[in-house]
Image (cartoon, rainbow, N blue to C red):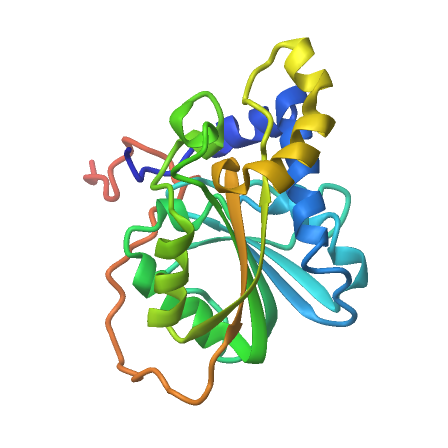
Amino acid sequence: MSSMHTDIVDLRQFYHSELGRMAEQSVSAALASIWARLPEERLLGLGYAVPYLERFRADTERTFAFMPAGQGAVNWPVADLSSTALVFDEELPLPDSSIDRVLMVHSLEFAESPRETMKEIWRVLAPGGRLIIVVPNRRGVWAQMEHTPFGSGRPYSRGQLTALLRETNFTPGATSEALFFPPSKRKLALRLRHGLERFGRSLWPAFSGVIIVEAQKRLYQGLPVAARASRRVFVPVLAPRGIPSTRSRP
């Protein structure tokens, strides 16, 4: 599958649909089983995490929503001062050790270089900081169906995700699963959602739609720090197109 980002318009449209709301509830319940409250901590959502950040930000000291340049960004929260930034996930505009928790949703599966992205997350996390990654499960039905955002990008197995975390100096911890109901818009499938989620978690966890893994920043083996020139150039989205930069004088 292509690792090209899902467009921000498609992401918003999905989460405003009935299927998207059901998916958000399923994933949020799994997240809550791992992260209960985040009292006075700094939380960063990377990717398109805003449907899930709403459930955590009330307790945080502050919450940021960083959205990749390839995806596009929207203002969030809607009725408050914006906490959104358009970023490159390998070069986050944050100081070292400045964030307590990171939530990655619709993020890692689209990363151009997953290891570089994870190194950058390691850099901005404070000592003892925690990370949760939500990725499509390569064995699940959702990864095979392209009409939802979970069917785009590069799906992972639990082993692949654990190996990546260890390679980039994270200690994997608690895990969870979500999206055991099929990604169908039919009313019957949506009505059966609660039962399928409950039975799926106990009977066939390997076939969940997404894998959710928490990890902690590991400190006893430091990552080498090397200065590198940015490979990225932002193109101002609002700049007028097709207008010459200089005009000949009459």
